[in-house]
Image (cartoon, rainbow, N blue to C red; front, side):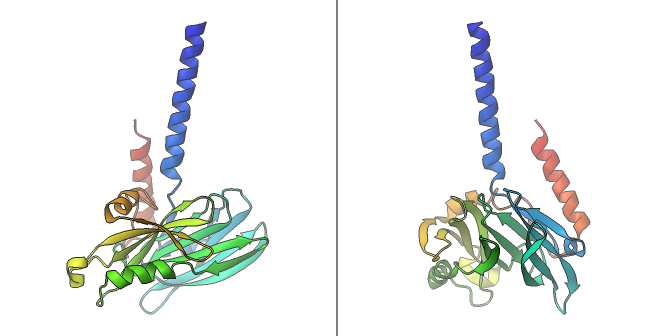
Length: 240
């Protein structure tokens, strides 16, 4: 009996460890879309089930594509935001406490230019906030590419909706010289944009192997290509 109980406890502990590893592995990954995905409404439910981000209203623009982001609490629309300069991937991730989410997108395919918008839920309202300025200013003061500028990535949420890890990157093309592709991480506080911690290039690149995504669409992807990539990732991660 003691052996049986011990084996059961060990087995349960193993399952708990596997479950914890699975939660940790998937906790930072965003929902991935391409502009063509917005030809149909796409819904991203908050972890607590109270709120939804809806992407849709696809439109073609002169040199890119566009759409609209709407936020709902049940059937009540809390806010609506225009989306412009869409080209490659779009990424949406709710914070663990369902009180904020980010939208990250590329206007130029897989390598750039990436930018981030952040939205916070309070009571029965949503508002866009702009906490990235201090980190961007610090990065640009030391790492520049006049020809191209920089990419900004959302990487993962930390501690509910108070802290977000981001990455700033010199545009990764040869016209940026020796700095091309240099990346640095910052953990920022959403209330005031204060930099709480800095991550080295090696550390933030390790984070970005899994966060915020395993799929980085180019500007040539359509929704079918995206779904094929998602299916391939799902198959590879489920294999023993």
